[in-house]
Length: 332
Image 1 (tube, one colour):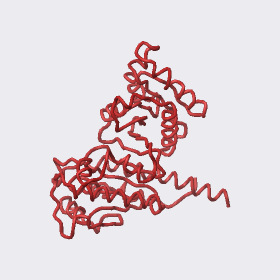
Image 2 (cartoon, one colour):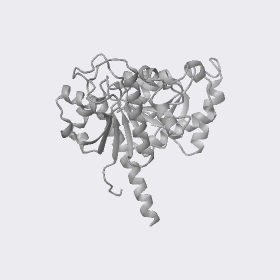
Image 3 (cartoon, one colour):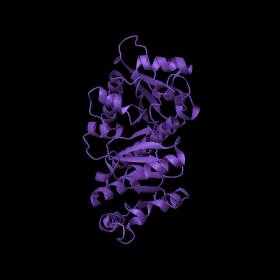
Image 4 (tube, helix red, strand yellow):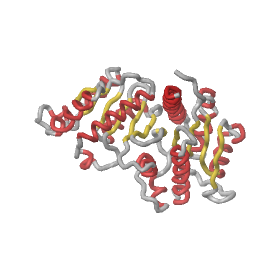
């Protein structure tokens, strides 16, 4: 593969009252992280300065370019763990800045620290989650969420919606989810991903005894994905599939709805699981935990999940940049 410079990656610090800035500084201080990419931190000066004080990590020693905003006002004191509209507004602003940088090609990927959905909503911005918000900024209406761990990865056909609506399956959506997951796994370094697709109903419908959705919608979608050259099978009973997949039978599981995929992934490796947004024109990874208001400001937050999210973004962006470089050379 052609050698290229380390990718440039933006990091948003999330809600100023949470642990985002803290875990960002801690993760970037790790030797295996600091040289993995050219890092750019986006956040308020007040929040970053507060995180530097509690961690003892000076901002000037952080191996990253700082893009600071003044959303909270000059000299603001961070109230740790506070649910505030101005904090939600600021966190959303960091995401907008990073997304715009990705779309303009100024950075190769973005990593988001956790924000608080309620705080953003209090600011007057309709908000259901990072994934949907970034997709809207990118002009995309149907993103997908992938959770990637050391032992297994899961991509979801639907995420932040009611279970009743999630059960309204669409074969085209399932095929697209399989394709997006397949491509993401390749960017993560698995050249021929082995994919298993969950059924919707208990025992994947048990030949129609427990519902017809599996046979009528999921089976045709899996057959179409196979026709397109993807190594996948299903629908398979979810209650046994995750056990087998976590032991190595598959690289990726396609879950039909949020909790079907989230519960086993968080049980397997809550600290190490990385959230990856698919179906958008940029690479975005995130930690898979919240703002941890209860320990914010106490220097207790573990940066392990942030480390995983940063390194995954670096790997995915590096491979995509290499692909682009090789394609450009081939055209010369």
